[in-house]
Length: 76
Image (tube, rainbow, N blue to C red; front, side, top):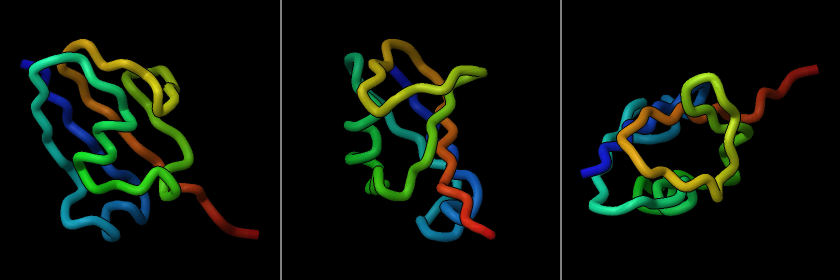
C-alpha cells in the first residue's frame, strides 16, 4: 500500500475542503493522477516538493510519501 499525504500550502489551504489530503494506492502512480483523484487543479500549482526535492507532475511515486504543493505567489 502506498500512502500519499498531499499538503496544500498558501491560499490553497482555503481553496480546497482540507489543507491535508490522504490518498492510498495499490501500485505506483504519478503526481498528475494524485491531483486528479484529490480534485486539485494543476493550474493552481506553481511547484511541487517531495522532501527537499522539487518535482514535476509526471514524477512517479513508488512508496509512501508526503507531497507539498505551493501556489503561484502574486504581488508587485
